[in-house]
Length: 618
Ligand code: NOJ
Figure 1: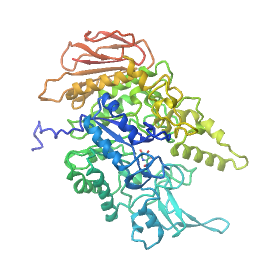
Figure 2: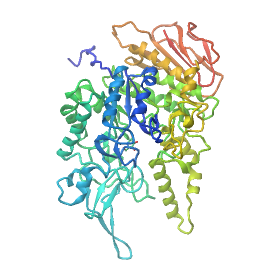
Figure 3: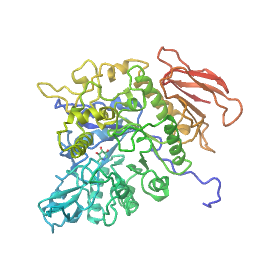
């Protein structure tokens, strides 16, 4: 191909381009054996339900053997399923059952770190000359002389853990420290060691041989650490430890390791899907390196520009005054940077187990508009280019934990670490009085209620008339591992299956619409109508130039506010002066009145009620 060629041949199409992936958080999906914990058999029971949504794959958060310090992201054996979830044979049955319904299974691959209970780490920590010593990142501490002359041991560098405190853990067996970017029970593997890579590749083949469709790769951009592990610049002078993501993300050998993994493992199998999680990576040039097909690295990424829009400058739990114009321009930017035309692929997602619920983050947090917000966001997501990911419960408009649930009951290690760290900081600043946790909780309650990961992890409410909302039949003092949200009578699957205008039915219709118009919605180009700060986000989607199949253009018009008198003027089409638009889908169906078949002309004013959206094919 010549660089001057105006029509280079488009990249190959794969099944995963147009796929919608449903994320399952196994502990909270469905408990089949009444122990209060979700399990694989429970998922198998719900395969028909999952298929009824119209999705193509399931991403299963980790259910490998684990101590459950970080909810399964601390793995002690990659080839075993934790007994609370079932067995490897259960996974085989799940793969087969999903295949019967034309769905694939994606496993979570957590290979930046293991659990400290993993046999590799047990061996590594046992002595300085253990053959596996170099499988993890061990260093001597720094000796520091205090003003009174005593010498103390400090961590090898000033990096802060993602869960707060130092990123290093002292281990008395050998009087050295190991690096752990997350919890102390999650030591980081040393990817510069060839044997580590080989061992991980072997574990990957174990699952690929069973016929999984691919992997979601946990914090994959952290596996290559910078040479010499230098200190991070001091950006938080009040803390001993400093955020260091800019040093340990996208390190010197990252692309080499991913390409090696691709060549030695992934390309041995047919059309494997990979989605890499890449926190703290915002430079488009860096992002594109991972996903340009000719570089042979990953299929797509979870990139966090949009996802982090409400994070304040002082970290996740500090307020942000983000505006609609920020949301619009962030979406537009990435839709245009990563698209089929641009030769690099992307994902669309607003939720996961690492975030609060989208209706609570992007809506007005009231009950009145809650389901309208959920539908509007469904319209947004199903009309954007990329592989679409939805998180369990999103399809019924699950909201954040209700306000009556005390924050002291939140269980996530990130939430707890944040509260603990803040309390320590305050205590250091005011040594003369005891700072109670309650005081800290009160101070940050609003942010925690808005953004904690706990909101994405509560049990699925299957049926409002059953104990534990149908999630678990646990009784006799056994309770679900974490609280069922108190709004289950308002928001549950059984109810929404019966109700024509439910969020669930709406998602089903929008996913069918996306499939029908995949040529435009999945593969086509994106053009915003305007990126102003107004209430409406409107954009055109157009099929690829030279597209062989005859396809519609799509115009999405979304009122992203609670203002129920929002006027939108139909834009001039990019393709001509006057267009006729016939309405195919809208969220204005609550009273049973259908909008299908209406036509609009350029310049005509359309009135949108709170969080109402229209999607027009023309
Ligand atoms: C990202 C995962 O999604 C999150 O849940 C986990 O805590 C960290 N990586 C560490 O594995």
